[in-house]
Image (cartoon, rainbow, N blue to C red; front, side):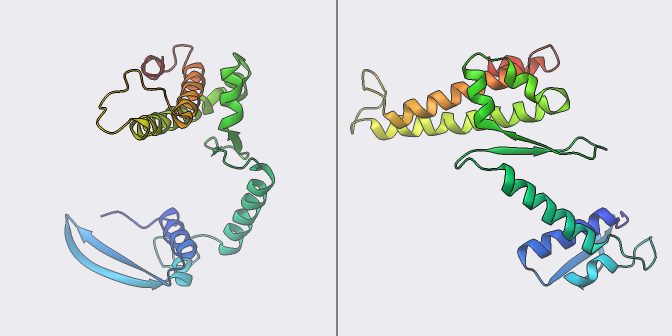
Length: 197
């Protein structure tokens, strides 16, 4: 029902190359009924004849060079062990932006406005959502640590001291939520701002 675009061909090719899969099977259908299928070798996907004639859907060498440059950039800039990074590119832009969440969260925890200013613009929502999702993950870890620290037979925390792992997870969660709150301020994302505050 849809035409195969160069982007679809690129997607098939990248998936197979990264996973080391030698072939791709494509099933065609019309109105939910299978109308046929085609099995292609991975190296033939860029040359798959679609509405663009027999010219390649994309240049394999160009994609490979771009991937190598991106990997070199990430190796040079993702230097903190155990940290979370988010790589973003604005639509139509030539440049990419890499955000290291731990540094942004630490700046937010220290009360600095620098974190939200450093992200700002079109990336504030994406980085804020990442922080919100990571905070939810740390919330689950804190709850699991609390459950592990309870003596057998005790169902609620009560007066039981919290484990260091729980305290660390709660501190990270709080820091991430503070950063998310700063990124969602300004009335641009009121629903998300209300969720994190």
